[in-house]
Structure formats: C-alpha cells, structure tokens
Image 1 (cartoon, rainbow, N blue to C red):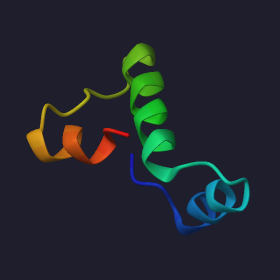
Image 2 (cartoon, rainbow, N blue to C red):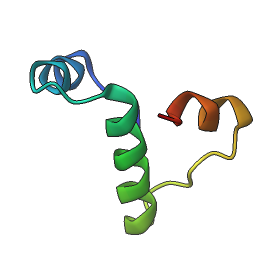
Image 3 (cartoon, rainbow, N blue to C red):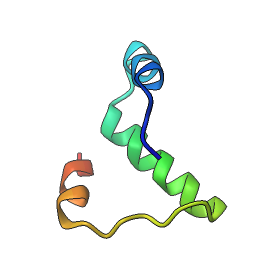
Length: 49
C-alpha cells in the first residue's frame, strides 16, 4: 500500500516518523492478510531506526 500525499502530510503534521509508520502499516496489513511484507534487504535497512 503506497501512502497518499494526504496521508504523508498527516503523519508529518503529527510528528510521526514516516519509516516507523510504514513499518506499522505493513505489519497491520500482514496481520489482516491483505498483503505480504516484502523481504527486500534494502527495505529492512530503511526501516531500521
């Protein structure tokens, strides 16, 4: 799921780290069975905080 510009603006305005939000969103979607979390090496490194 790609975040929309509006969603990115809301996350930013709330002071939420966008990478942590993306990690949370992917985890929630995988729990719901809506998508598979990619096992991309670069992706995991980008989300590491």
